[in-house]
Image (cartoon, rainbow, N blue to C red; front, side, top):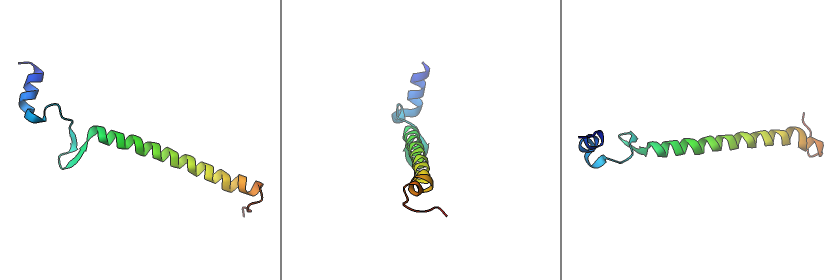
Length: 70
């Protein structure tokens, strides 16, 4: 028997299915990687928004006379 056949015999109907992170949590590893990818992208978007907001409040607003920085 080859390794694939042994693995198929050992896993039974779970053969070829993606592994879950935890047995009691129905999230697969690829779903967890996709969530990490999207949350990382969202974090960078938030950082960029914070930088633009800070530049607007600190420099652009006072330059146009919208408000004064005290």
